[in-house]
Length: 535
Image (cartoon, rainbow, N blue to C red; front, side, top):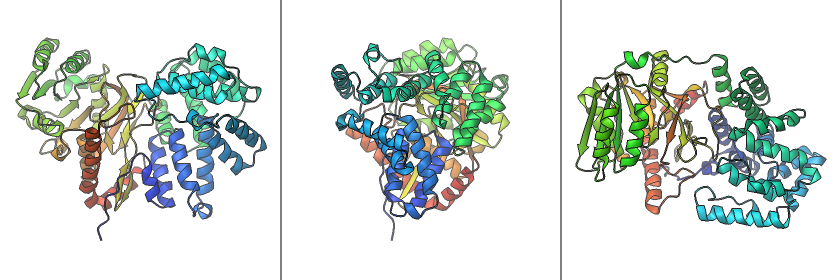
């Protein structure tokens, strides 16, 4: 009997698999991402409710590791504190958990749903917390939650922080909480002052990782590396830290001459986003692309995109600059294929695809070409992507297969909510898919040219599907976190975007299509997942 497709949202797949599979998914996820509170609590909830948890030899170590992280990530959230107290029997932890629980009798204090993608909800919740703190300046739980609003905005706490009266029992943990605010945002002076005191006592890998990048960004790389080594001793499962440390120990060189030596074409398409397109071309002109060809496809544009492109032509005096104007919008995958089928594109050694709403660093092409030169097996290389609305915040990293069963095929999540880029993902590694808003393809590995699947029209995950198809063919994909692309649109339903029903339907529809397209290849996917254990 054919197993039906099971739709799942973020981490919902954990409820449809057995405990051993849950541990496997966690292991794969930790090879890709540094866990946040949501990830820790999702896996803890699933593990602790499993009737086989007590008899599984992995349970104790995994649960204690997740609890340690959760308590460090949320020192004023009573739920992980309560679990930690119960599991460890620590009397002081139990007293702390009870005090915190006594301040969180109103569940609304902890409910932060939709505050990042709904201005009305954000304003209402912020005002609610302000009113609590006005009445009770010592309400440390409300103060901790209030910090999140300034954190999401990427700024230092406002004047409200000066009115907080921290209870005596919470003073040390409030310093931990402030460190969690300042360090990820790169407010190094204040983070360093807090670290001087925090580091005199026991610290966990969460704090060590933040401190490591704090020192690296302050110019003390050896000390940062030492902290990363200490972190890995506490938790060897941290894939990003292992890759980051390797990059720091042996920095990847960039060969800037390759942009002049390699035959490259840069392709982009656009539909009625003239201003975004103009900004993207202006950014591209400021980067080092050598004599790369440029091909732009106007996908049935009815705005002033054609004028914007012609105005940008003069920015590229040394480049073969061509424009294709279609009378109708054929969708993203077909547009990519059209560009990829052009004879001059097929004749190139490398084809870069960039979106019409990005800004790029000066050396992006040299970095990508250096990866291709150093790793001749690489078919596609992509970058780290950050939000245009807040370029310090990560939008997308890379993804690997995390689960492949008859009814569910899942990839790791592309990012964690409100994760700031401090360099912790600055490394190069193999992966299964990268984001298509800025990536480079080796044309020799695609004899028929790029084949983006038009079944995913009009847009969204055709780039993901293209990388996965390459992986199924045995090709290699690499993530280059040494390149950071600013992406001004958040397509595909990211956490900073509210979607209409039609958009949500498109996302779910494409997810179902991808499942059925991948389902015949379960055996090959399992092999890819085994290969993934090496990176």
